[in-house]
Length: 148
Image (tube, rainbow, N blue to C red; front, top):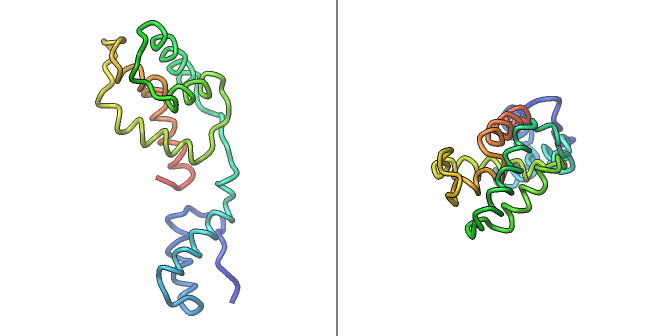
């Protein structure tokens, strides 16, 4: 029997269908899951896709974070955060893996963001990753891709 392939469907629809269709070929659920996930990734080419359709507000937040980081000498910003800001401010494409990391970080770090305290480490670091606009865009993009 040929392996299941995604048919213009969300991951949340494909994986259960694949798991059911592949029961006879792969009785071990762990092995079957690994095959279904691999088939999903191959069929969608998500590993190879990148996106630069984020709004200007995301780039502007990153630029603001860069400016504030220089102004206050923020020792809290990591190399990854600084690199993310450079990418966002230049409107360079982001991989799906990076968008996932971006959404994950911004979701956790939002509690440290204080719009009124532009010298705070949490505020600057949050802006470096695209701020609230970045979180909204990343979440929306992941939902459209069926990954959230």
